Length: 265
Length: 269
Image (cartoon, rainbow over all chains, first blue to last red; front, side, top):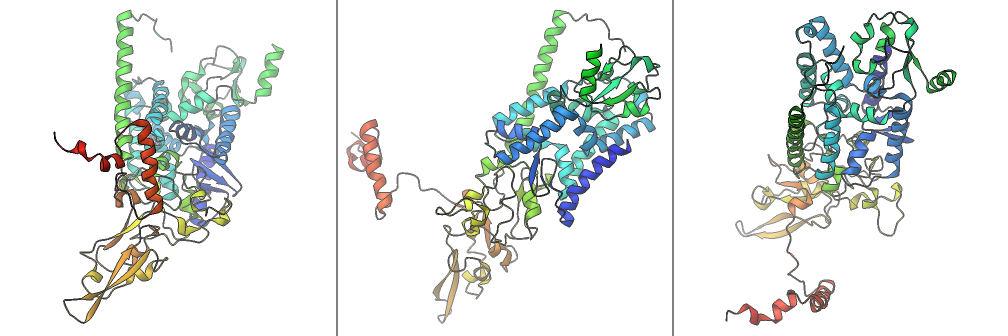
């Protein structure tokens, strides 16, 4: 938990430091960053939109996007969402308040389908083609937040406040778990990622704590039923379930272990 | 969490499909309309070496690398209230103009070539950041409101002229006799739009309450004569006439030349 906050805030600090005090570790923001003034890292979703908008990009930024795509898509899964994205701090605060004020008990059902994010993703890509601009980047509250924190916010606060209130009052895990196409994008591309949560059913006591704490509980289908890894791309690898599990039934594993386990079976 | 059994009837399924399609197209329309509106605000001044505005909006990844590279804090990233596509870099010369750094630090850092160093490379040089010539940049063009420019009143002011980094090239002073007093001269500033880079140092220096000289994006500031006018005194433009007549022979279309020669068709029968 605190490790996650440390990572989120730390990465932001490196960016802010670059702007305010001239550090050269990470220059730019989460859309595209210049690392140690030697190579670039770029947001592959933004790049995909730009390409669809019809602009041919240079090799630097494409390689940068590919690196990020490899890191998240193959190794980490949706770790961007839980370990990097600053919006996650906002929505988690909303979630925390929801619990504190017992709003979850008033509103029990979630009326909006979690798959809506894939439609938002679809729209973002289609609209990029037709409008000739990167459609989601034009309206993204996530970009507004990290850009705002680094370069000055302006009325960007309003967009962030909207997300906060939406998550607090309208829908539990509303933004990150239902709407945000960035999460949807990483869910799709990280289908075969390596680092996963591993469940050992023999240790599980069916306490259901992990379901309570999980921001994407639909990924936990196998809990208490059979051993294996959480393979759903919607898992953000936030590790909350591991933290909350007192029975040593959940832990992070790397791909090699999965393979070895499969061979043993 | 046991899901209830799947008992969707055909009618419900069809309804759901149409509901989904409706919501999707509604969302698409609203979002698309916003994008359309947002991308037509063409009054923003971009950093040096920015590609055409249309391409720029597609290419800019909104990372702010140019903003961080700018030593004068000239460049800003647009915020929602600026009425410029959010997150794109721009500058307001009246606040801080572009000071035309010789090494143009804002350009080579751009990861997406939305700022393209090739726009600043003289044709006889290799495309490396060291060969950039900042005077080739085209951020906009300065325009003078002669009514509020006090130099046009006859008051001596050459603030913009002195501030221009391309003094006597991009901005010249025209001396004219002041007939009103009979013994003074007007020192009227005149912009040469072909040399002006749009840095905005003139706008920044202007002494009037609201600047009488200001930078506009070139596309906004410039008119267009159209293809029908040919400068007969310029060999290159005159050539255009010959090429055009060759084309018309093939296509049999009315062109500039035929319009001038076949005047019969202009007369009512």
